[in-house]
Amino acid sequence: MKILLIEDDPILGESLKDYLEENSIFVHWIQDDREVEYIYNFDQYEVVVLDLILKYSRGEDILRQLRNKGIKNPVLILTAKRDIKDKEVCFSYGADDYLTKPFNPKELLLRINALSKRKHIDSVIKIGDLEINIDKKIIKKGAEEIKISKTAWELLYYLIKNRGAVVETERILNYVWGDRPVGDEIVRTYIKELRKILPKDSIKTYKGRGYKLE
Image (cartoon, rainbow, N blue to C red; front, side, top):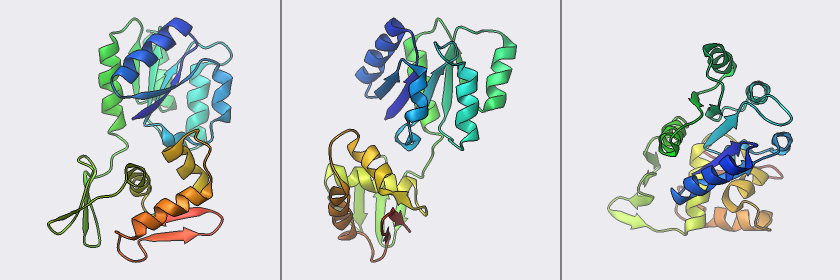
């Protein structure tokens, strides 16, 4: 899992990043809240953890801007503000959860795991004669298990998560390869790998744009 943490406290931010990554959650930590406007691919994050008291902006304003842009990622508010009015404002702007400081890191972990499931897809997906178990990361054709590379699996999962929609190549690169210096050709290579196991025409190419899983 990958989350976005917007927290300007250097000590708290670093300790949360270390704790969550020890529990298999990759954390993209933004200490300067102005950097949020330069993030173009929120699909890579399962959850956004947002402080309200920041250096340059109000967390409430960031939350409202995200929702106005149509960004639907679950947002967990992490703040020292305890007043019910503050909670009311955040929930009215589209927050999904609200945790006040101080808190137990384990509780934050539990809440993040719960929120990540709201971006729900069925645990077992059928595409033609293939049965894909998302939780177990197993692909079967009848009784036969079909094996693919780890990278191909990440690509397949992302296409499944966005099934029926055109996914831009740049978004695929960001999700699967992150900051690694790779280009469009590598996406085409792994699309070919998936096409070898999926039913014909399951993945459609939109030249110059991206791919869609039917």
